[in-house]
Length: 175
Image (cartoon, rainbow, N blue to C red; front, top):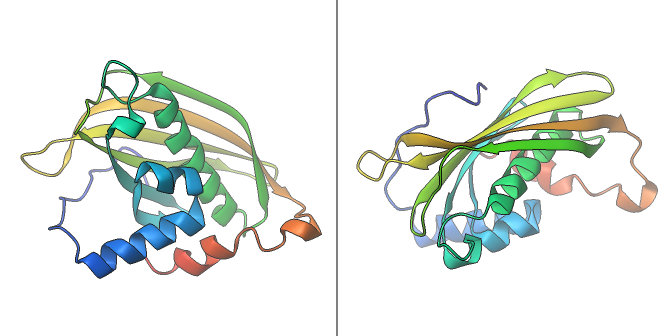
């Protein structure tokens, strides 16, 4: 998936049961993203996408999205994608670089899309882009940030963490 690909139009609000199951999925996949309210929309070894409503929890004192939240989203999506792309072997983030171009204000929705740039035997590089959603169309508006995440991949999984990828396996085929 190309991180720059066009986002799909926003669908009508999901029924309560669907939102609840999506929240349960995010709680299992990534606790920090779940705590911020991130919603996953696409989920595969070739790319991930989702959205985040900018709430007071996500803001810095000037009521705009905190840059650290953008970095958290980038690291989380790249790590999940790399873990799946490696056949659910262990991955470890080595380097994250993020550029912020413009802000997203309290109440804005941010769209995020991650895709692999390089999937090798020992390293992976993922690109993650974030956009403000255009509220009139539900599609991506101006890009607010771009990140590159480099990860070590295909590392042995310690016995005590052998089930670490179960949530990824469980949900990878459901979105």
